[in-house]
Image 1 (cartoon, one colour):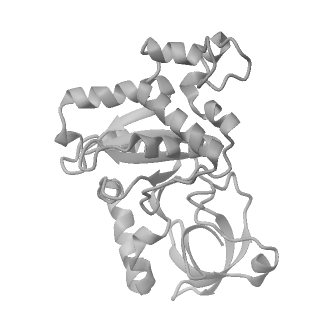
Image 2: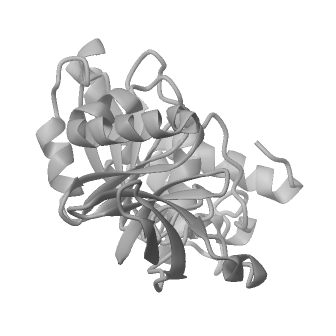
Image 3: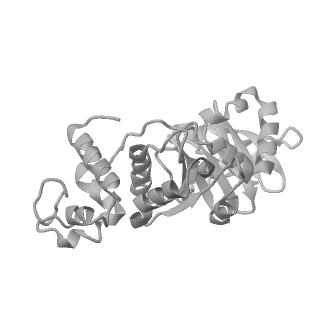
Length: 292
């Protein structure tokens, strides 16, 4: 029997089998010997031990399309990063860190700003302005007013999407609205094991419909750019690429060099100064080896 790991806690893996339900499984010892750790999102083969109690053993992990570093999940098609427009105000540096880490792991990202009902349209336009040159799709929503849900649902169809964002931005509220059936199903899982109640501490895959899953991950308040070198940082700012051919020096860092095409674009308002300031801060951080 084949299924997908939707949650892993304390050596137990919960495998969703379409049309059948969720099985509580242990992983065979061979994975430990081979130093392979099953990940949430893995497609697996399992043997059923008790069909009534829905228990089994994972016998094989099918080939992964990808495996993310943070969050540690597998077979992700895209990321939906959620920040609020107010209460709390968006932390652009933290958002840019997340975008860089998804670029580093070659994962497409959609930006969603929640709580749009709390601010005027001018503020929404300002946020759009900051990120419009980056090539990211930007969505606005309000979980409280149930606005913007259709647009989010459209981008989720037939994809496995990791949903991430800081605590307090309404991420859980949006997920509950997007997947009410999944919440009911995971509620049953919580009854099965008390550990399952602590959903915010663990990554969890929620089944929405056929070939459509969303990955709920713990809220983050900091993010270190693990594995990123300062010299390659500029390649993760998509909007820089258009203007780099106009730099006088090949390999320009876009910081101290004269006749820099990127700095000229910033001065002319074609690149957001907020994005550039974050770039300089992150470059200096990587240069000095500091961690955020």
